[in-house]
Length: 133
View (cartoon, one colour):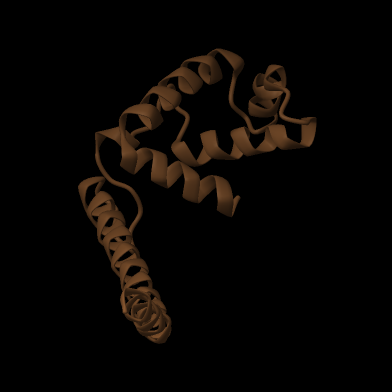
């Protein structure tokens, strides 16, 4: 009799499997929606914390030029190195082509890299400029 009971239990599990799979898929979809909503909320918070809004440019001390070089210029020079197979030794040359003296570029490069590492808002704005340029 125990064997018949086990077979019936196995049949019940097999019959319930499609419903369990559907439920798991529904929970997965809900989790993805929640994760996307949380990510959007975090991005909005980072933009507000960094002085960014959807229609305005950056604001605050973190976005002030360094050695006369703006974040926009830094992103343009950084992207320009792609033409030279990302040869970092060419950055000063690219900066000079964009009107930035090499002594300014060295200070600006160090400063902007430090700000990008230290400020998520600056990093996000750099990423936007780099991708757009």
